[in-house]
Each structure stands twice: as structure tokens, then as C-alpha cells.
Length: 85
Image (cartoon, rainbow, N blue to C red; front, side, top):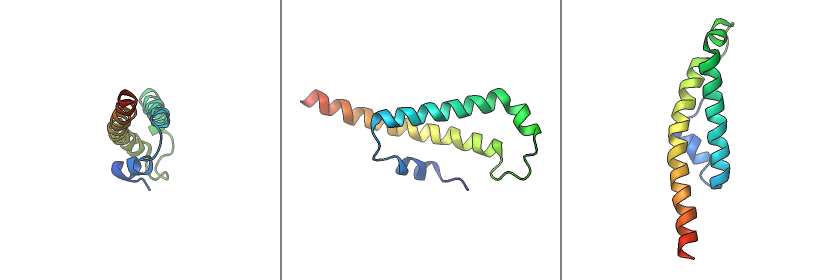
């Protein structure tokens, strides 16, 4: 079962800016892998996989969008604090 993009970001809310960057990079790797190997992945026996690889791909894209917003927020928090000191 996949969670909503908001729930995904909520789970990462207290993480550092650096940890969010690592999570973003992982999502990008997963998205690129699916895009590069889509035919092979979808031709495998995917009927028994739930959620299906294409649903995981689509959710990863949604997670990535939500995560980028969280990264932007953390970036502002981190560097605004540094600028005020």
C-alpha cells in the first residue's frame, strides 16, 4: 500500500536538509531506473505485484514533487537562520 504524497512528506518533516536531499536523490534514481527499463519491468510477471511498477513510478513522481517543496522550506529555514546569526 502506498501512502499519499502529503503523508510521505509528513514522515520526513523533522529530517535535516541534507537527509531530504539524499531522499530526493533516491527517488530520482528510482524514477530514472523505471524510465530506462520500463519495457523489461512491465513485461515481467507484474500482475501479482501490488502496487504495480507503473503505479510506484507515478507515486514516486508525486513524492518527488512534494519532497521538493519540503526541501525548499528546509533550505529557507536553514539559511535564513544562518543569515540572521
